[in-house]
Image (cartoon, rainbow, N blue to C red; front, side):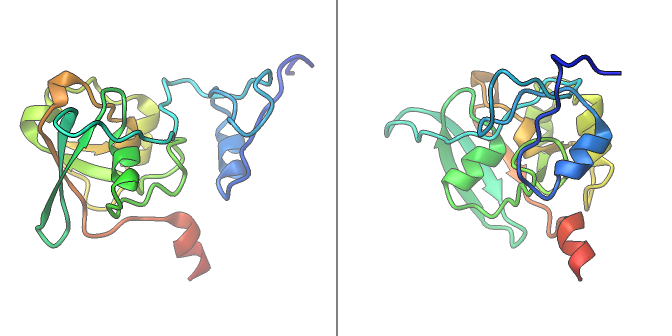
Length: 170
């Protein structure tokens, strides 16, 4: 039984029930009381607003669309691939807003930069198992945080995603 000092905080999203069932420790939802603790066992990168770097600065990120077009943008250290895509109007879904409750921000990382990333957490691997077009270098964009080592990274966007909420409605 949970003590009265420990409560579950859920953001208002279609994935709230799924997160409750998963019962994993995570930071509190920024829209709720920050003194309330929630559940998640891994290190979760949170969805945040991206500040575009000043011209001539920043880390290069190359997105390859399903059509084969390459879009090059620049980001700051600490920004994640999902948030960078959203800030630059690149179509990368991110249905759960980076809470590790879906696989819609699945990207395929080039081998050179994939080898520089930390191993994915168990939670990320669980979500990747649900991703469309999974490869050996697949990662969730919300969990790939930019660093100087990743400057010049190329990520390929799969031709489709699996969004259980959308698929359920069909």
